[in-house]
Image (cartoon, rainbow, N blue to C red; front, side):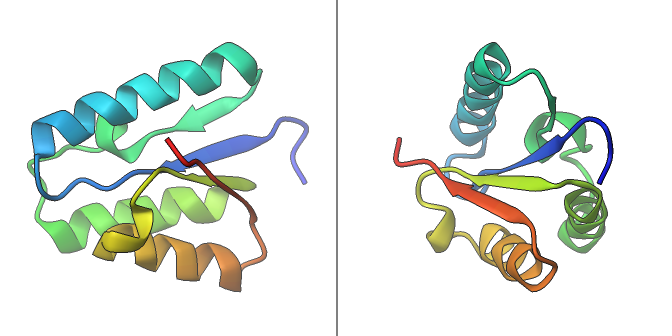
Length: 100
């Protein structure tokens, strides 16, 4: 394991994309206040104009480089977050689920 943990933030994007991106950035800021670790937020750090397959490839690569994955509310209703959840479980990541 690395000296410093990396967290991956899994947040739904579909639906109201603009609101979901804004909410993911707020969650990222909240986590940064309490966690002295790197937090990777795909919705703020991956080009949102990419085709979905390319964006998911980048997400999965970053998830695999992370030690901890944090799933935001309603993740289970998101195809991308559900895929990230399967990959995280299959690769032994530490998982956290937010209720709000």
